[in-house]
Length: 91
Length: 102
Image 1 (cartoon, one colour):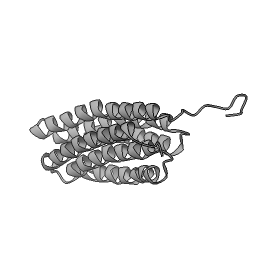
Image 2 (cartoon, one colour):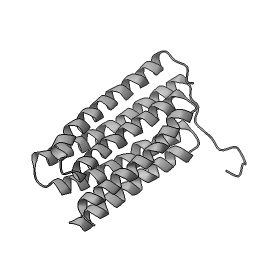
Image 3 (cartoon, each protein chain N blue to C red):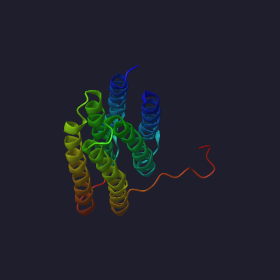
């Protein structure tokens, strides 16, 4: 088994695990469950981007996209938490 | 080399799967926060270590290390902010019933 196949299989497995987070986003009882689901979704997507980059031997391209996505999701998650902390219903 | 990659990826995927299991099955928001903040951070570090080992000693590896460091700092910070916001808004934690079987 080559390393490329290994990275592809890992990325595929992570994509399957992302479905659990989608379920939490859809069904989470409070709004914070949904934000938590989006946060975990974004973290896993960052890892998937890097794994796909490694599988196609283009890590130097994909790492910039992954870094930008991680930064954006972190800021977005903090902003959503702040927004619902100030003025919000927990549901 | 492939053996080391398989080891790192397998360990990382195991922690990712544990985090997903926790998100799916744990009873309330605060316990799910544990799964996302701890298990997922360790899984991210292990899988990104595999990518870094594969890329060798290049600028891309430095960037992968910076992504790993950023996620290592940012993921617990974001989950902490979420937990604090939920607590201030009055989301009560799950408690086992007095005398219950759970």
